[in-house]
Image 1 (spheres, rainbow, N blue to C red):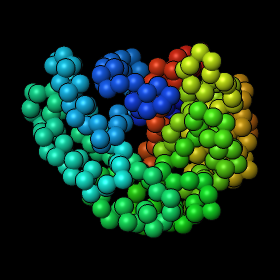
Image 2 (cartoon, rainbow, N blue to C red):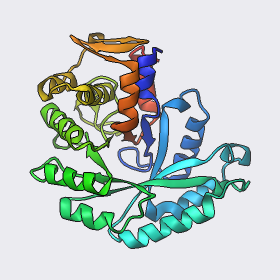
Image 3 (tube, rainbow, N blue to C red):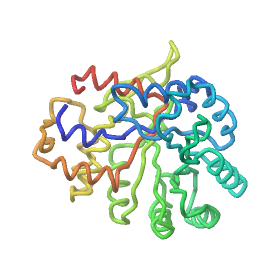
Image 4 (cartoon, one colour):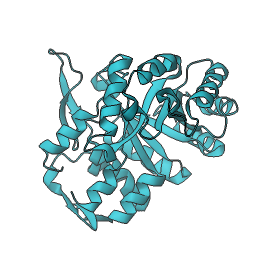
Length: 304
């Protein structure tokens, strides 16, 4: 693998196996994440995502792992908040007090919730929620691509939070267009708001994909995670909205030239160091209900 591709993919996937379309139960989700952390592609993995309401299930499943595996480093978790923010924040504080003590050999005390996610329809909801969430929890606000987008990003910047954008789902109308995503990247860059993406990003390059794992599932054109994160990194470097939309719409893997010192798409180039910097500070991660599928698709494309 070239250094530029590694820079783009490093720590990319927040594993969300509990969520649709995979919708696994807790025990296989925890076993999967444990296996991925110790697997060949562990460098591709970021956090484990779960609702606050299921933390007790997580602890139970976590304690069932072999101690030698479960104790190998601290698990980084993201918790999605429900409507009662204050109650969920209290549950997180209790979980972190009990489960993140250094040096304890118990498996259930080797995990730590470092970030939270929640939906917010507008700036008022963002400011209200932010006032209830401790600053030490990195907060991601999932916001709609609507006429409230700019005011929502203004509020996110004010409270020092991050944005979350849905890039797909189980039906065509859940996928934003390439121009919509490009506009979102440009606005986030202008407000200096980092973001994560979620849903519908199992393919490296844009193209046809089944909406879910049912045998009779329909297919549609889905965004590619290489397109999305490369376009965002280019925007961070100064690419305009129109060119970013074209990059997002690219369906030819051969149009990307990955080298150790950088990557080229058409007439545009970006260095590996610039890619790594964008990933650290701007285009952060993608929440995916599958870890194996993006990895397998990268292999199918001959990239890993």
